[in-house]
Structure formats: C-alpha cells, structure tokens
Image (cartoon, rainbow, N blue to C red; front, side, top):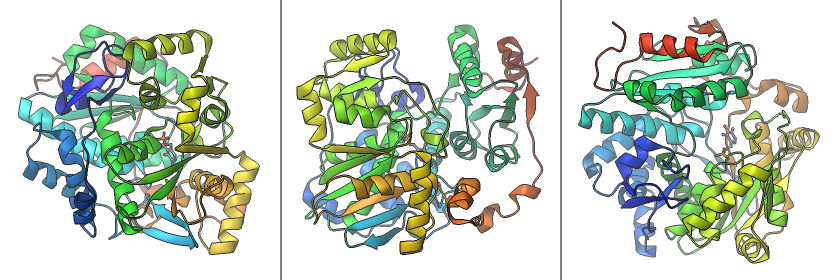
Length: 472
Ligand SMILES: *Cc1c(COP(=O)(O)O)cnc(C)c1O
C-alpha cells in the first residue's frame, strides 16, 4: 500500500513513512494510491468482534507490510484497553431511526483518543524499529493537546512539547494537560493567543537545522494514520445496525473535516454509507461549501463548541482531491488560489457530486443550547455542545425515512460544564477517572511569545534524533 500527496508533487510513501511525515513535502496531504476493498463477506466476518480486533482488521490493508499483523493487533489492543466502557464506542437509540455513538470513553473524554491512543503507539513502534527518536511539538486551544499528551506520555522514543495560550484554555482542559506527570511530557503556556502558539510551532518547523536535530514531528489531524484509525468506529456502528446488507448514515460535528472524512473513507473501502451529515457552528465554511460549492474563509468566531472554531478545514483537501478526479496539479493550483484569495469555487458539477453523499446544517450558540435542553427533556441524554450540533443537523436535513442515522457524540458533557449548565441548569459530573482532577498537582512552564526562547527550552530538554541528549 502506497500513499500519494493530494498535490501530486511529493514522494510516494509507504504507511510508516507517511505516518512519520504527517504533511507531504509539497504542502499536500497523504491519501492511499488506491483504496483497498472489503467484500460483504469480509464485513460480515467482522460482526461482533471485540473493538480492538475490528480496528486491526480494518487497518491491516492500509498498513501493508509496514507493521506485522501480530504487532498491529497488540498495539490496537493496548490502545483501547484504557477506555472506560466495555463496548468502547457504545450506541444508544434516541428514536426510531436515530442513534448516538458515544466516542468519549477514552482517557481525555473526546473522540480524538480513538486515533491518538493508537497513533502514539504506532509512532513509538516505528521509531523503535528504526532506532530513532522523535520530538512532537504542537499548539492547542484545548482538546487536541490533552489527547496528544495522553497518547505520547511515557513512550520511549518520543518527547512531546505542547504549547497553549496562557490563561485562555478552560481549567478542565488545562489541567488535563498539566497534571500529566511524565518525564517526556512538557507543557508550555505562552504569553499570547492560540494563533501566536501556532506561529511558534510553524517557526520551529521552518528551522530546518532544529527540525533535523530533534526529529521534529506532529500528530495533528492531517496525519493519515489518524484518519485510518477512525474508520473502525464507523464500521463498528454500521455492522451493529445491519451493514453490509443495510446502508447507514452518519451525522458528524465537524471542524477540520478529519472525523467525517474517515466516514467517507469507510464508504470508499466498501461500507454501505449512504449519507454524511456535516454539522457546523457559526464558523460554517463547510456548511456554506456544501450549499454553494464555494469555500470562502471568514473570521473565526469563538463559540460554545471551541473544537470546531476553525475556518480552514485542512482535511477537506482530501475530499477535494477526489472531486478534482485525483489530479494533484489541478488541486495544487486551486489551493494556491484559495490561499491567495480566500475563496475556492469547485463549480456546479463537482458540487452536485459532493451532494450525492453530503448534507450540512449550521447551528449558532443559542440553537446549540436549545438542542441540549430539548434532548435532555425528550430522551434524558445530556450531550456536549459539539455533539448537540451533529445531532441537530441529523434532525434537520432531509433524509430517507428508513435510513438508520448515527450521530457522533464527540465529547463528554463534563468537558464543557459551563455550556451544559447554561442549557439545562446543572453541571455534569466528571467521570470517576478524572474526579480528582482539580486537586492534582500541575506542571507547566510559562514562556514569552518568543521563538528563540521556546527553541532553547526545547533543545535543553529534547532527545536528539539518534537517541542522545541534545543538551550538553
Ligand atoms: C476535534 C473535535 C471536533 C471536530 O473534529 P474534526 O475531525 O476536526 O472535524 C468535534 N468535536 C470535538 C469534541 C472535538 O474535539
């Protein structure tokens, strides 16, 4: 199995190299050169498998020969062993043809754990096999940071440095990062905004000498391995509801388009997915795209669903690649225009193709709160603001009456207690594993918004690519 860039001008890589590379060198994203296909009999054979075994089966053809089968099975088993629910991704029926899939039983209470718990282990395995070491650096405005830290903690071949804007993440989110006590985990609070943090990370990646010395790498949502890991819960839900004989639809609260693109990938490998419903908050570039065929960048508005406060959805490029008939040069030109003018129009024919599968709806904060309140009243379920948006989108769009639709609950309501309290008048409790979060000791470095200082801080603590200390 080989991976090609959506912009057609980067080296073709095997799974392990695409894993470590993240972004392709031409600025594109890696996608499989061709999709593996599962026949109906293959899907039927996966029904009822324990979750980790299902993951290993789904991922196997994507990994090719890069990791042997027994190791892959072991890594998948370890990745999901720490989830708090025996079903890992339990389904709850809400009404005749609507289900909720809870993706928040992992260590940091959001769906990102599904991909990152596996990704951290895949990284560590591949690096150990090569006798090398990597330094993960990232910026976070909340959810991604804690999931990445939990995924990388205590791994021999990884150090992780996570930047967050000082005083601008919620206390629960900060504590989920800063209370992880592990020698290879480094939290840095920057005097600045989330954008300043992102600029610092970009600055580090652009410093090629530094990049090579510490083996700089990223685990952000454009990493192909994250997409693949997420295919498994779509298969898990579809099989439970009657696939491969019976088609299903999914409703996904969407920011960077990584999660819903995994559902698209599930369909590409043969799962009968008939409808994908994208839910947006006020930052609705994707909803406007699926309505008009035009992607136009606006300014980011802070909302009650901060993990979707995004204006450029990086992973949408993977869908565009197919809409441009996998013509990397044509897409590269379109993306240059998008960067320059802030707009990209795919035209009537491509829009029509996209709309055979995708539908979209947008909710503002007032509507989001109303949905949380109404859902609690009608079904007793307390959903977080992100999940509420997906759920409401599922109810709003036109869909075949007999198509079962699964709405994804992407975060535990206790991660967003203020928004939930504003909607229903009470605060959801943290699950047992995080009950003492507010009492735990924090460890975090506070640094100015200064690239040289951040770089020196990392150099003094990171391990070089060859496994030796970088500092004297
Ligand atoms: C990251 C995140 C999203 C958005 O997922 P994408 O893959 O970026 O579309 C939605 N909900 C929650 C809770 C998240 O953490």
